[in-house]
Image 1 (cartoon, helix red, strand yellow):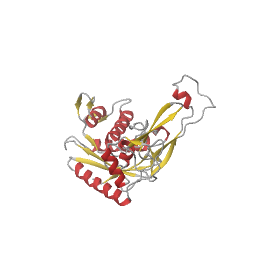
Image 2: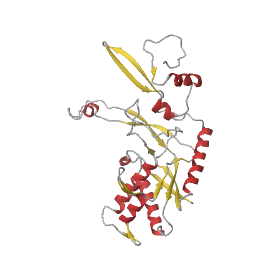
Image 3: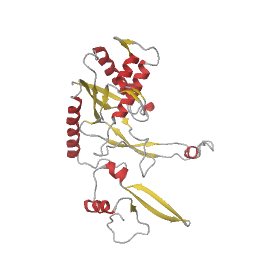
Image 4: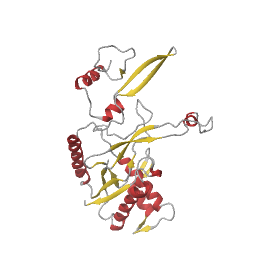
Length: 292
């Protein structure tokens, strides 16, 4: 199953697709796919090279992972508007909810710790249906939960109304493990999408002691080792809409608790950050509370 090529000369080492024959034919006829998640995470190819009487298999995605802006601007706007309307309807089913806008200060790195069938590093969290960058609800919950732990539960558990902050932590985020969850949290975190558009730029990650890391410390790091420059995409100058459903009964949610939840969210983005490399300033931003 060969990928479509414009020249008629048959190469000595053609790149072969992992895809079924009908999928390859579809790509040939359409010539392009606008979903970057599919191009990078699902559509791959390989090439077999013979070198020193040995066969070497090179595996790569069908698309350069830094080529993200495939969608037309009008189509992106249409998708994001539809997602916003759907999320508005979802959170309106809860007794209360928060709508916030998160403006990235500097840059945001999402998903670089994962992997794909064709790479050891997933450079960006792309939505599997829409192919656009987004912040998963699980990431939002984990970051805000971590902020609550550090801000309120590392020392004394201060009282707030009839309960203390430890009690409210369990109520808001739930208790137990994934295998055996005792109670579910009252805060429901939806995935966060860009408001109207997004901007992706090229960033770099540069390990300076490649040999030292590859050999897992077998040889010491040395100044004559060559830095390993890794290109990866980052989000810049983008505003995300964040929806959080509040599934408290009216009698359970008082003004003090609601204010505490909002303050924790603001601290999460302004002081702790979200995504990767927050210790060096990535993922920090300004959050604005919208009317709900």
